Length: 557
Image 1 (cartoon, rainbow, N blue to C red):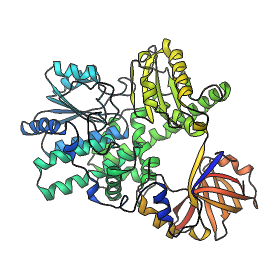
Image 2: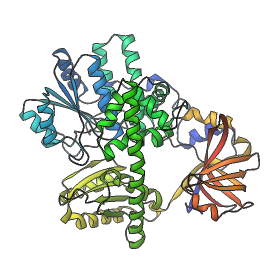
Image 3: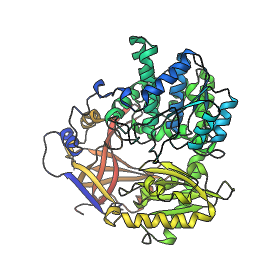
Image 4: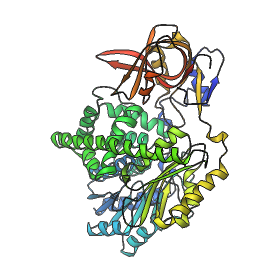
């Protein structure tokens, strides 16, 4: 039953205000989570912003054909759409190019530059890539085409020889907030450009209209929900609630969101995966077209296509995860502090999801690789745990790889198949050296003991002031002691566990995602401690408080 060996309460005493306890646990104040425009930083504080703005303004004045080279995930697609939307607004011929996950791999490469030149590019602007595109940038320069790189991935020791590299994570960039998603960085570029080309009132309304896209990319890319990201996402979700983009309206309907207010959960679990499914299994241009569409019927057709792809993605992911877990169980968890697995035919579009699920289940950095290309290479995706910086670990294996890049928490790479075992061994040894067993002991951190009287919609409303939640500002989690199980059921085709719990107040609806098999281990009358979040759940027009379980143990355990 129990998943986490250690539960740790950050506040174990009494309290007057639950909100203040949660804020203190995160070293935040009420001012930190206030919806204040003062959080927005000056875009020109970012290194090379002046150079980027000057070159793009030249393209605007001279009506130069501008290629926007994006990426195939939600952050990359929304970044591309934001830049194209602005170019359309100011009368520039913007041409999108998105790499194909299967044919091109990640980022701009020389063949991508050739595509841009064939499209008549007079300027190339990257969106969510480019900081490692050394050969591609050189190829563009040799052809006489300037490149402006807009990216947020951690650079290597050198930067590409572009006209401008706008990236808050450059070592020489003093921009005060480093956690922007790529769509946030693109938004800052548009913010800078709009100062010159738009009058004040128009500018403010236009920038606000882009924030639904910024919220989508920011939440889906799991960047820190702190600083500027909080304001951009909070405002963006308000715009998303009433979005005028037909594609997003159609997708919300198919995702079952209807008229429900959009929050980070809705983006992360319902909208984001559907948008991502295009680049994972087919072409990211489907998602690009959906977000750019102004035709209701076309938008409905594209949303249906993404919904079908997402269903197929789930099937491929479930198959791959089962095979990966079988490999882990067969080799044993005790051999190394990192899990590295490889499937002969795992779909390229789901290997990141497989790695993420392994990390979630086993609490270790995980790498999932596949040889599905059939060209003598393996491609992998990595997710971290225990504080291990996964992209630095990948960088230390650079001589065994042909491509690599990413963040501290997630990375991707490609290498020759003959080097796979050497790569696997070196990465495992690196994690063994840097991680202790204590680092990898699954630990559930809870904010406080929740009193039965606080399991209410009023508590949900009070805590909502701390939203949006995400990395660095996780949703509050609590312990509720000595609950009596009143009813149990497996729902969602047996995948999830639904309970009715007597917490000492009214009997409370409770859900535990992906734990449906536990229905045979629990009985009415059992007394348990639960670790949970508290949320509002609306069903058949009635809104009630619901506990969402993270873990359970026998009462007093």
